[in-house]
Image 1: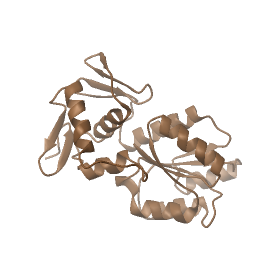
Image 2: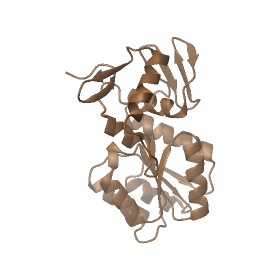
Image 3: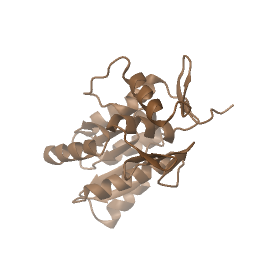
Length: 224
């Protein structure tokens, strides 16, 4: 799952990039408000699962980045991560369209838990566990079970399965899956997604992930 991180502090940005990557996210990191707006104009819902947004940014303030995003009616989850800690600051951020507000310093575990909750709600899933056709995925514990039996998945297999299960009933093309799984600097082979789909079918059963010929991949029933 792919995040946009907007943070101008290099030390903190490095630490966040490393920490979020370790927890399984693909992270695009930009350091100013104009770069953030450009990234969101190019990507948005089809690319990012959520945005982690600082407010005190060079070139364009974070609140203006957020307002611009909401003026386009994009429902992309945004978590403000900032040193601005007054009640008035929090009110301004939430009223500008933020979904959550976390003050620095912070704990990485709390940040990732808040991100999971935002992504879960954005996809209409109130429960933390996702279960489809006997396959249960727990984003917090990073585990998958088939009919109660644990199944070992690689980090990318887990991420791909998570994206497909979050979008159950929706056909996702290879390009859409690549956009949601890989950051800018990642090298992606021409058949990488197909290889991971093959691995998931071997481990979870061939009936879970359907191929819609010429379109993409689907978990669950497509709407008629």
